[in-house]
Image (cartoon, helix red, strand yellow):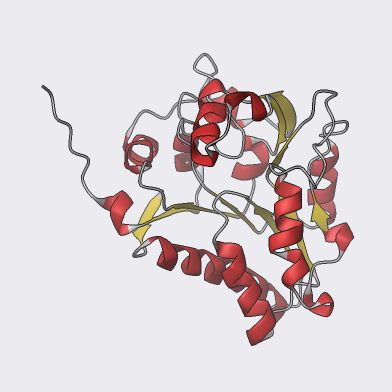
Length: 258
């Protein structure tokens, strides 16, 4: 897995938008549409990507965007877009609604995994001709999307996990509650997520780390054991995976024993 340093947190978000746009531009040059897996976390890249659409003529109308994951309600359905924690709602408000309609992805090209039919994602990917690139971040426990650690799973079995409904790990819920300064009980316990199979099946994987708490998990992903204990470590199985980090994340980790 290649590692590249891209400056401060804002510079990294600009770079992420630039790389996303480059996928679209290159495919358009070759006369074919683009299909991307995209996260809501990081999120800062979307305002820069919107600027490229608004001010520089980037055309996303033929681009399919597959959302990585979404929380579920108590009945097992997707939480509504109006919910403050809805990833769909965030993308609708903060990204799609800001784009010129003629250059925005059409509603049918904005895909969220369906908890009632998770296998349908595979068919959508086949219809799109495969995933050109998967973009994402790394969670505190090394998760990619909501592919939470499975310490007892073999690497091969974990790499084959497809889109599915699962329990959100306690560590992930607690970390989100801290970041949002809200009660843990407000964080949903279930989610639907793109699987490692879909992530590793993308032609390119581009992961970005811009948080001050990420130096440890980044080093575990890059230098630690290849293991389902740290899902991000499986990026080392991919022939074209790149991890882009900030100057802060790149700083040596100091361990002080008292």
